[in-house]
Image (cartoon, rainbow, N blue to C red):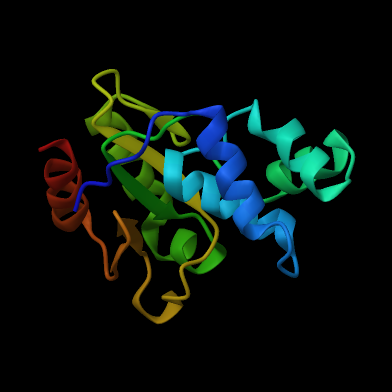
Length: 158
C-alpha cells in the first residue's frame, strides 16, 4: 500500500487548518491532518497553525517536535518503522535494526536516495509479546527474525 500525498500548497494548508481549528486539542488534530494530506508537516505551516489558534510559533513547534511521528520532510514511498522499545531490544531488535540499515544503506530516521523507503524508529507498537516488531506502511508485523526483516526490506524496496 503506497500512500499518495498532495504537494504542499498554502491555500490547501489553510483549508485544512480552518476545517479543524475549532476542535478540542486542535493543534494535534491539525498537525495530523496536514501530515495526512502532504506526507509531512511543512515548516511554512507552523506559523499558519499558530496564527489560526492564537498560539505562539514556539508552542506549535514544541508540539510538533515533541511527537516523533511528525515528519519535517516527505517520507519515502514506503515507511518501515522498527520498534526500539526495551522489549524489542531485549528480543534482538538492535541487530535487526542494524541489518535493515545495512540493507537499505540508511540509518534510522532517514530515507533511501531513491525515495523508496523511509526507515524510522518507533517507541512501542504494543506487540511486546511478539517482539521484536515492526510496521510497514501501517501493517503490523511481529516475531521478526533475520528472514522476516529481509523480506520486509525487499517488499519496501519494490
